[in-house]
Length: 298
Image (cartoon, rainbow, N blue to C red; front, side, top):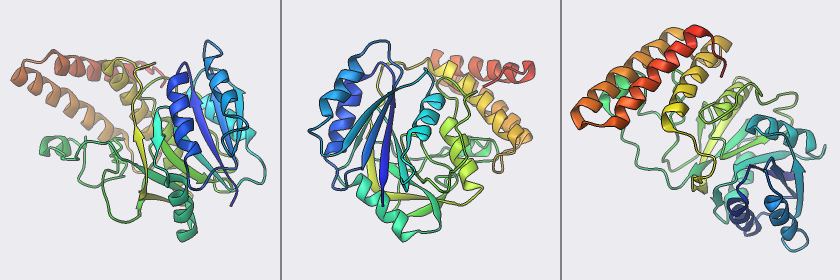
């Protein structure tokens, strides 16, 4: 099975180096790695070129316009026609040595699956509060895309299972299953939900399988990170867009209900903890609702 791995990056040469080192340590090396870069300097190019000829796999540097969705579409266009599986990982992830082997094994075991997602090993324990569940802001079910547009991560599990969506830092697809599909280039910035949108559209065609045996550590680089309030504001617009586009079970009434719940819960927590953080999240939620009314795009 021919497989290629894609790393999209911007101004994170050190993170990209560490990610590439973890790829070089895989028990099932990819046939090619595409480093798709939109950095302001040539530091990432130099890192990529340093891996050529000494990594055991082909490494190709590709320049692309800024924007993760555009970078990923450029990567899709660069894939070899004979490639069976494409892996997407973030530049700030570290792959366990058996990650790619386990992803490919899951594809073999689940021939009906269009995609396989990996486990993020450094997630906190999932303990959804009852009040967040009541407002469709969380769920005990993992890997689900709620009617509110909230996407619940897959935290734990002993065996592979079917899910509604993938995290963009650890997702792989059969090339034939996503033929003709594109990442939505109107989605830009943190919280845009491009991974949720794309994977949920794939799930409408065929099954998505999450496997706990393929693990990555997501280190969440501090470079290019945005304010949490701005991310939440954009995330609310993303959820509304999912409802407008008819993705999965997401609907506008549930999205609005969850926004009201986000504001209410944040205000209560702000008062209880005397926390400016929660107060800012409440303001961001209101701003996100205002963006929806004004028709601000994702």
